[in-house]
Image (cartoon, rainbow, N blue to C red; front, side, top):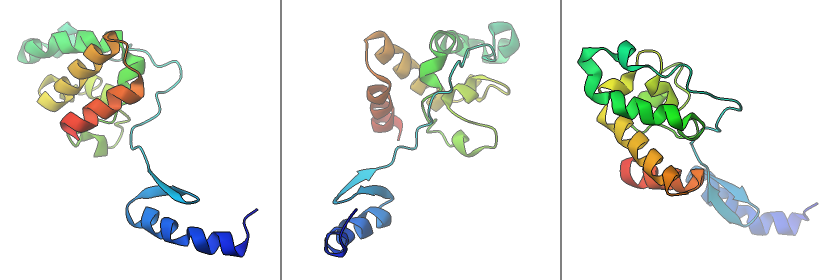
Length: 137
């Protein structure tokens, strides 16, 4: 339990945090992550296949194959091309399902390639998110 004096002392940090879109942990501001939490048990079952992509997006098929190998990672990444705002899009994984926006979007493809490469290097999901934010955010 905080005293009134402690609360008043922490108030400037709280005001700063709320004005910058960050969360305040008493006296220090911590930015919120807008990356989604990977869904438990997520699979690549809905990732489009080469056949489903067709000839029009055949050049993107290798990236879809990469995503199929790491759906649990890609599901924890917010896509930075703007599609994250579309209804029904949960994560970068959504770009490789359904309408397959990643079939023609260089940002979606670039994020997936980077995520795959960093994952194979042993980087954590948070490290991968930070690299994607730095390059595409």
